[in-house]
Length: 238
Figure 1 (spheres, helix red, strand yellow):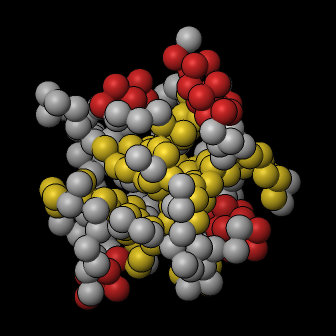
Figure 2 (cartoon, helix red, strand yellow):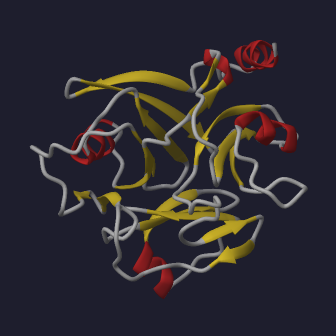
């Protein structure tokens, strides 16, 4: 019932087509696009009880405006604390991690998705640490998929590592942000080339795999799955 009402509202505001299906190299992806001239991007982790929200319905209960779409927003520990840098409403609760380490997060270069009042950017983590911008919200994840127009050097066209994945990338002017989730198992190389060759994004960041979930009310979609840590969401500008 809630999803149906939100779908009607988004259709009336002309945002029902914010998410679309894109075929690339024989794989299907859903691409949800935020236009920062008329939309805002937010990031949330905990509820009023101090515990991780974990689910999209809990997120909507905390966010005043109707959510156009949302997805899991970065890697997290078993207790759902962020693995790397985390900033919410200008307050930093976790420091940036720039050392190499295990797993996808430590497969350098990794990056930070930084949301400011008038733009959003994906920034390589060491560059971010050298000159940290004032982010209203920020989440760190890894690896980077595309770095200044180049694919991550560890990605192989013939990789056999197939998983469901989601990621984010921003246009160079920081005004358009593409949130992408694969509709099946894909490689890093396939997802990275989607950002570079189809979406014309020069910097893109992997958010997570296997646990990837999308909430898109206009499509009547709210993916089930594991409880999430940080959650990225898009609303209209107030």
